[in-house]
Image 1 (cartoon, one colour):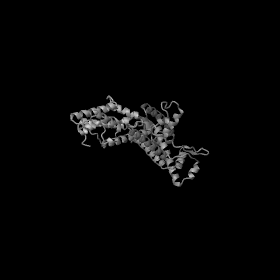
Image 2: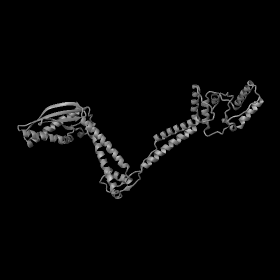
Image 3: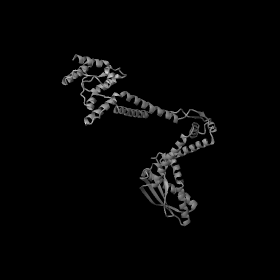
Image 4: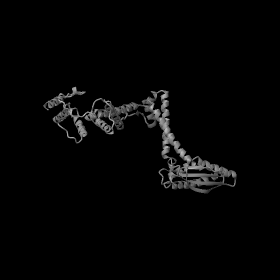
Length: 415
């Protein structure tokens, strides 16, 4: 084949014919799409089945433990411990008021107290007692107990325990201490601060009998919206810990046998009050993935298009009459559609539909009209060139139906 087309017009025609080539080979596209979709879906299904290597078993805890070695039991024990640690941290993240407070807009009320007494040792001892009472969460526990008894306390909060966040502030004065009450809103913080003041007054009366006569004075109360860097770090640390523990637990479970998984499920879900506990692990539930089916179809379509493009690019045969003119500069005298002589293929109506799309509004000539038009052009060409003989030849003329050649010969002889 000689040099390919060079003009922009000819290149556009070739690209257009390539697109029609994709449609003409629609069977290859359909086959690859179906093979790709089914192949990738079956691969995903088998892969999931292999990963979900679980069978239905019913064994007691003693039977499971007896069938394992020391190392396997230790692995299950470690996994159970991680699970409990994960549950505790997850529960804390869900229920703790601190974990739901925006650390960059923290609503707080700071109470500053001063302890005075006639004797310095009494003032010092009372201050240390207050610090211990607040710092060791004794006051917080007392507030929780009172909240459960009084229905009107923390009425706007779902759980009184979640609303409590009492902490000590640093104070350089040895007879002073600060308390910070934090809430989701400033109203919550103010309510908690009021309850804390009442509780400290109650505790102060009890403490006078133990350490001696002294006075507890509230010298300052400040409402503030602040940035709590420590709280932000605490929230990030808890979130990171939960993610790390979850990843480690998943890794351990992936390496366990089915008996280890069964024992792990028993220890993390079955209560100790069961008379004869058994573990039942259900059959794996594996489903066909629509996502993988669509992805496989796309991959098959791309691969089919690539194959059609390569076949089109390296094909040495002429595909249409336009290539005869553009590649060799030879005048086309006529075209005869030989599809009528070919055996009709399965779903041939789709081939006919594609042909109609390609021809557009061009009128389709009958077989006799195509032969007559070709012979008429041959006759005109012979008259113009003063020729009386013509030779029919071609690279694949032996593959043409004999009816076409006979019809052209007979018509030319008549002329």
